[in-house]
Length: 208
Image: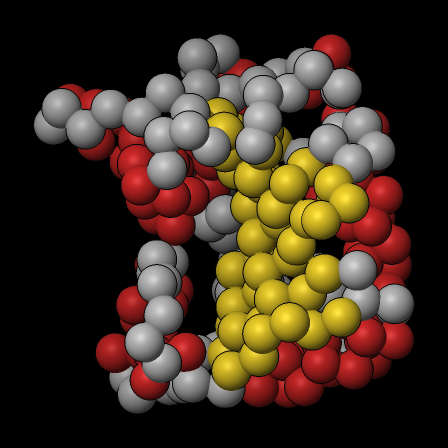
């Protein structure tokens, strides 16, 4: 689905107090514990996580300013309603550049929620659970850091169940029906949409 460009979104995002425009200057200096969501969409998941865990510092990463603007606007709406959380910021960047902005072992947890499945074989390297990206996570995650991945795409999940262990990681939690299990869960916008249609939600947690 093609993203709708919002006129002026680049200026809005680059000048907003919630956006970190020079993340490379923070490399090795980020607050801890540090949790990063890659491909946060409109930000529902990471906003809720920040509210629930005020002692954790959250960074939401997106490639497109138009998407980040939506996340910021929703955060501003929360603040207007008196819901404060000062432990969340946003960065417009590609996940391939994580090592430019985060030092080795600096991130404590990475969330991958409803990532683009990139179904064609020639696009495997773009999947966020591919060996290429798992190597990047390996270098920026803390020694005991974890990657949490949720999707409604069974093919991508099956791929991830093979690609992640093949990259030298251990699967410590796997479910093919997250909502049927009695475990804490903060939903994303997509997750609510898909699950309301009866689609099962798949989840895994991986560590080295």
